[in-house]
Length: 246
Image (spheres, rainbow, N blue to C red):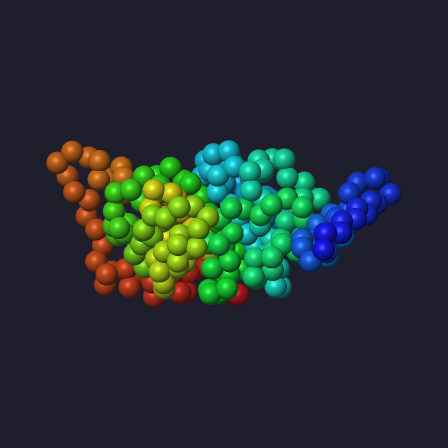
């Protein structure tokens, strides 16, 4: 049976709902709950921050945040500065599009893999320069700084696989075992957290540690001093009490 499509326009003549029977359901800003609208605003702000801070170039990288059983994601191939409140893009946890008319990020398999297997509310994926460079050199980021403990331990590098594939998502999950961030070989970074801010902070921390290691290891005739696993474990215990009490 042919798909049936109908457009519903609000009083401004803006396309508010575009329904395809049995398929995607596109929803404009006026049609989504306030919680979703606020989450979308925060997602767009985080995506734009990755560009402003030099963690991505153009439309590379992507961001997701979970609201209930809906996963809001950046759409593929759309510059973040062009995203508007009416561009809300979301899928359910099976990957079926339930919000928006823009196609979701091509890296949706990685985001779904994290959101369905880990205690994650938000995911940030970037092509950060220093982290990507390190991903081409080692299988694990050397313990050059104790903040590795904040990511769960030594940061692993997921073996290379073509972007957007289930194979890449599987490689990533193995690298993330017991961790909240990892490097993707010849590709970039991915990190998750309980909020967009936490996922972003972990991404920035990983990029900084990669930059430190690259600079230290580039000094002729000297080798960076690395922390021991025991020293990292001690830091991990101290970090459990870090910050202000909740």
